[in-house]
Length: 157
Image 1 (spheres, rainbow, N blue to C red):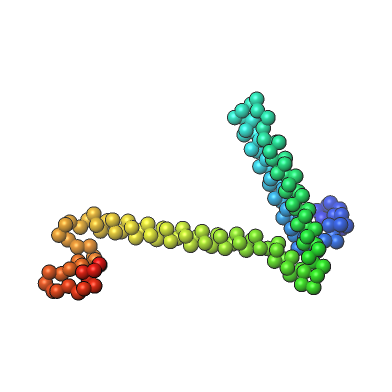
Image 2 (cartoon, helix red, strand yellow):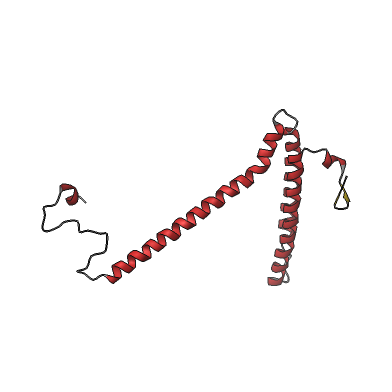
């Protein structure tokens, strides 16, 4: 089979769909890793021209990444052979995307909560700064009113 003009090896075509999807995603991540590796190396060499760069650090990471990808593809393909294996393999492949979505939703909720609390704090500061010692802030009543006898719960505050 040909894909974008390249002949795809039979071993890749024999993989189950979750393993093929994981392979494609891993190849994309490896390409980004190589690009970032060369970019960081160029910046390190600009900062320190006599240095060796960072190839001895990042090439080890690249080898580990490739070995990890091969191991996961083999494991996903093995899981696909069982009765519910394809569903489990799809779950394993898509699980990181699910967690990233949950983290994104959590981050958005946290940011909106912080923004809401910040705006409430600003309003309260304006009300407190704008009121003199004799004026009261709207919505806040004194704990003890001099005209009526206080309840025990008000005294315990």
